[in-house]
Length: 158
Image (cartoon, rainbow, N blue to C red):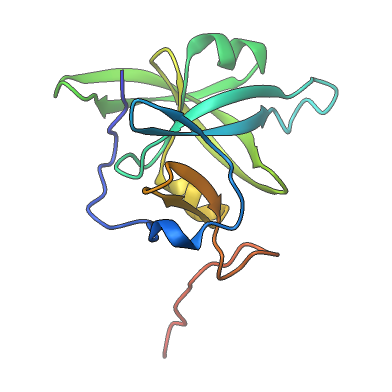
């Protein structure tokens, strides 16, 4: 089940295949997967969980199965209504915070609890400045900012 909560119309971090710095990801039926480490920043003594996450720039949120939320002892903060791939609207727990790590990059997000696999949406990918290399079916750090995540922000003028 894919979470399409907050569908996005933009073209997040998609680069031509030739721009890959290093291979991170796994080939499987045309999908792009990323090896992530998920942890609960409120429970520092709890071991992180290593997962293979499906990258989906059309989804905004991190989605995790119930067993991952239980392993990380995440607190349900609220309930959210989401639209799943078949068009149905369902209510799911919203848990967090979750520390998401990809290589040396990380971010903190909330997660929707649903499905049977981890789904990495646009918000955590943008926060860690990751890009999808569709020709190679890989996820990588943005080659334009290989050492530190870059974020574009606008200054408010008065």
